[in-house]
Image (cartoon, rainbow, N blue to C red; front, side, top):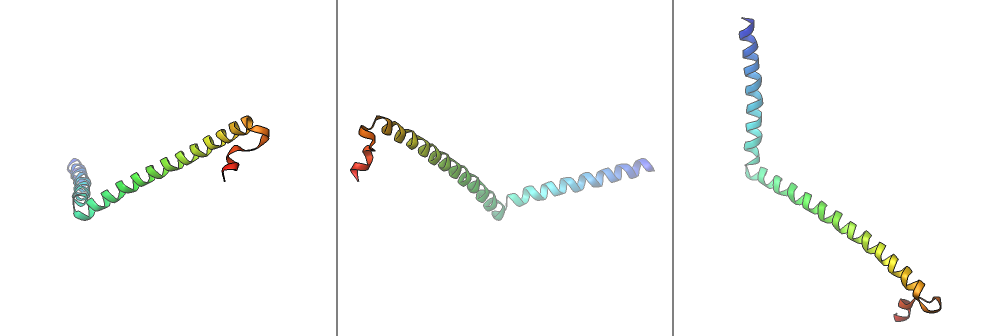
Length: 86
């Protein structure tokens, strides 16, 4: 009798887990679920693009600093050559 109750409980537990997973899978295939997945995908892409842009801006600022230092070292009489163009 104890063995039967154990297997009944295991069966009920597995049935609940399987039913929940099937419900989640079915909800992902509804129009709202597909829209949510698409929205989350775009958010991930947006975050990746923002991170890339931030990295590029940081690299540009670093390179600009390097170029300014190089021009100042090679500049004539300590003047900044780019300031004469303004």
